[in-house]
Length: 398
Image 1 (cartoon, rainbow, N blue to C red):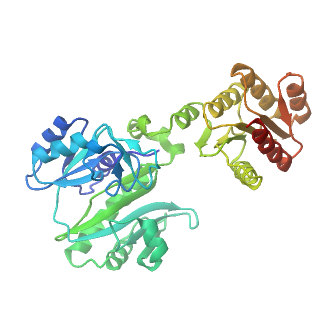
Image 2 (cartoon, rainbow, N blue to C red):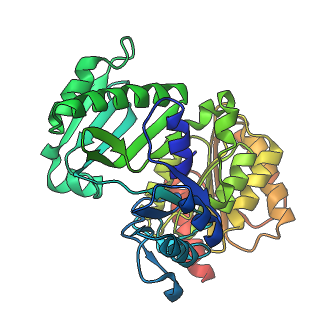
Image 3 (cartoon, rainbow, N blue to C red):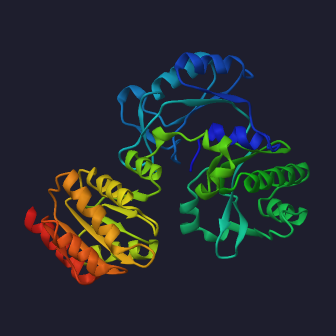
């Protein structure tokens, strides 16, 4: 689960993280009112969407002023103008995809005198089973580019969960970033607060880009956070921050039924049980010359109703030209999958090729249910056979 920059800053502020004064606005008038309550001089107006690269992004609409989603202005009138140019417009960044995201709110923040821009993130590192600090002196730019072009400029510092963050962790990071004097003290306080906030909120990622040096202080000029969805039941206050408008409608609908769904750009809809089987299914579809339209994992405890819902979600994608159901019945019974597939196919008036490969618990009963349904369901003996049949059927239907 992702949240907006202003929400992340509000959350981190509770843990003592120093953030610049600012406020969220949903209209240009609200943005001007927020600016009136900030120190005069320099204001920053930031589009709030769930995507990075806002500053270098571009708006689709000409009336957006031809600038990016982060603008530095000097008067309240300019704040109002910038907000009016952003709100309601579609911002395209390198992370949003070509469709972009509609800006429904902006964050107006006080400016500051920036001496240096740095990069800082905290993430759960599965390789070491620790929270790891990742820092770089190359702030304000895409960390992916830094990793590709100058990987030696990225420093990693793992934190042992038994000890938590210690002074030597902070000093090592501060020295790596070239901080001096009171800047080191500021960095130590900042990292300690960030770490506590990261753990307490069950965050999966915290990214600050840029982290800026201004005088003797080190401040987060941006903040991106996302959280472990499996831990959200412990954090109803974070669940309230969820912005469903920023999520794919089909992925949102799937989450309401405990289905794991990710939309892709291909034409073959996939329904599987298990992440490993999902990856294998996508790979073999590509091997046979097509592209997967989605990943949909029904899990091991799916019911007939959930399978039916999963089928409907796949078919709600207009790009889907064929469906491959690939189920290995261990905990999940093949007859339950078959009943769900048949029920869904009848309800939605199936008009694309459907190939089903079942193996495992109650597989013969599952095959019988599909055979007796009278529906044009193509059965397959193995994964390769299934992929070949669905790709062939889609090409013939075209």
